[in-house]
Amino acid sequence: MIVAAHQPAYLPWLGYFDKIARADLFVYLDTVQFEKNSFTNRNRIKTPQGLQWLTVPVKIKGHLSATLRDTQIDNNQAWRTKHLKAIALNYAKSPYFSTCFPRLEGLISHNEENLAEYCWYQLRFWVAELGIKTELVRSSTLPRLGAKSELVLGLCRHFSADHYLSGPLGREYLVEEDFDQAGIRIEYQAYVHPTYSQPWGAFVPGLSAVDAWMHCGSEALQFKR
Image 1 (cartoon, one colour):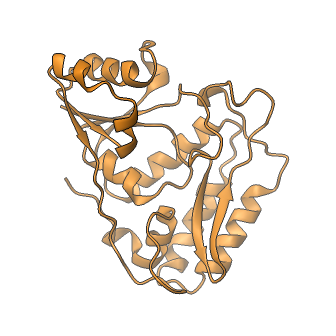
Image 2 (cartoon, one colour):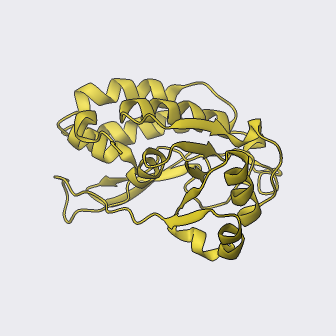
């Protein structure tokens, strides 16, 4: 069994979904700590002026020491309206805008106060839209398994996995000897980003999946193992 895991992400990039699609089971890490300036609550789109961040604001008090399960969205700010306006302005001429934007409106406008719950709602939309059949499990439904390398090894043992698919940054904290002793193979994701027609200069990879979705449509983005 191949297991992969990742923290929640807002409007994730295509590599996030590649990792999910290549696994038999994906663990949604909603019990890890919130990281400032990560992609958990923000992502980027392309505009004529360059890249623009779309950020979900969170309530500041205590959020850096809280888990994502406890991180609250600051809904006193009109961020949903701003994000939708930015997307509409910059993707109105994209081939699939008329098909995709009404659905995106519902996705972003979803009323939720908790960041992990909000990203979970989005994740289920995206995996269905991209044809991904991988089983999804929330870490908050599992026993406490430690942190970092210990957490990942615990997840693999819990699900009797013999293969863990890690992101490239896993090289910085995974204790590979422990996995070797447990008979678990570690594979580091080496995602090759597809290119497609994209306006305003040279192609920019790694943007929110919204960019590829608007330009290519869901049919062209189906993830198959």
